[in-house]
Length: 556
Image 1 (cartoon, rainbow, N blue to C red):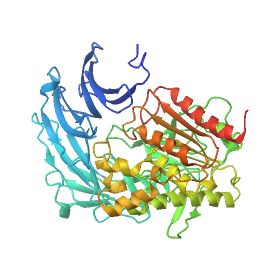
Image 2: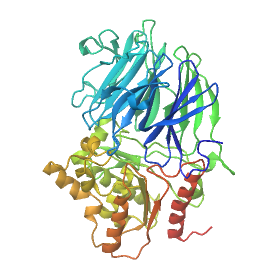
Image 3: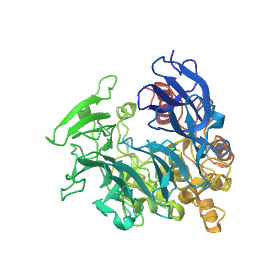
Image 4: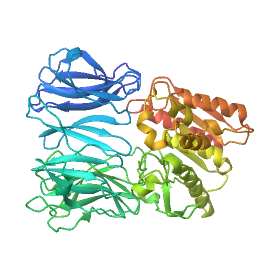
């Protein structure tokens, strides 16, 4: 029987095979709170050691001795990963030595193995700073060295290729660039060589290394694209120009796939759009040909030609920056135009689906993100409302039939919009919404709080306290008409504690002046990501869509 059999919730986290292929280390979450249990399976006998290592992050890295595994243990209260530990197969986990202790709670800590399998990295990432350590996997002691000490406002990440570390860095490059550093002297920035230059119109968000090229995940023109930088025989750019992997549609999203080999000229990537299901391609750099490997099936009749996707620029109210459609707007994360087979049932009933790319995301680079966080956060909310009004003015939507939907930080977005622009919306679906902003950010015992002072602001500073209070959805509920609402949360949520949306709904019920639907759904067997399982998530989607259709009186 499967590991999830008989359980209300099950999520498999990291799963890493030892270099000799004999052991599998894997992480499991049984309630949805992201407090994983680490277990080991002998792949020869298929036996699972049932004595788990509890309360860990979903980050694992094997050393090359096939017996040593690095993992990150969480603080039991804040759930922050603070202790990088080293476990030896067969040893008592209670005696696992601590390799690294994180003392700055504004950082997230993780472990990962290099693609070359030559190094293990310990990463420290905050909103605005990074620090990486590295150790040779062949070193029995696994002695870690600091690549470059963290500095305020310097973010970087590293990968290993040949005799160099490849560095993605925003040092003197707000939209990031790629550098290469000699393994023997990695922290000497004056000796770094530039591989991919900084560009004002292109944001580098990720990369993958190969012997003869580097693949970059970039944002250009608001879209997530893949760019290729060929490498010369010495591993440098050698004057070879970058080029983009082509697309046939105006709005789409490309993402780097699983590419474990270094010695290949074939890149695997995924592609999706609002009208194209997620598709996996192999792209041959020598011939320029792409091979379709897999496309997600769509149950029932589906003809992409029956639907149209468009890409629009909308003027923001302050006229300071162009605006794209989107629905999240925080952490520099971007909501790309992705395919959803479930969404077809709305489109087939006459809905128009739009994504507003508000400031706070990173679609147009780092400046786009910075203009929607800290003391600029209200731009995210105003941008969202402006997109709604512009689409209605262009005739894309009936002004009396407009709905908003967002989850987590996107739940904050639509909850703030409910206070600021309630007249523009017929209904709102707020999924696990972050709504009691001031109270949460004042409580450093809650998971995420200290990590996110650079995202929202530290309310112990009066200027941030006042600004957070000015838009916190819970604190700004007033005696006014609100749209119909469906609010969801999870009992085991470690990201947004369930009591935030519950108390928000209670306050809305007390103060609102309307009799519109105001529904609260608490998922008792899940956390931030909702139910686990292959089909259970469709139940939640069906509930949300039923709310929309019911509000419009659509019964078929």
